[in-house]
Length: 61
Image (tube, rainbow, N blue to C red):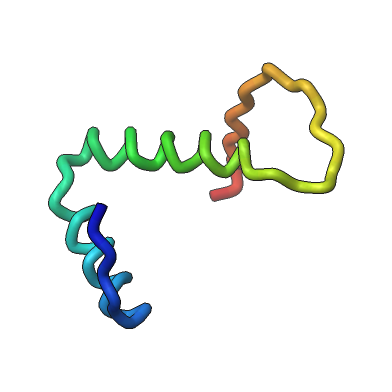
């Protein structure tokens, strides 16, 4: 494991550089992994079981 000491701006630049180096499909997969991690983030709110996936398309765009 490597520990790096850097500023927030430097860390953000490195993350952006690594993200932009990914192919478009790898970016989508990275986004989906992030969504899964956020859904597992502990909160105090009660979690409801919902297996539905909804896509809402607003026709007024």
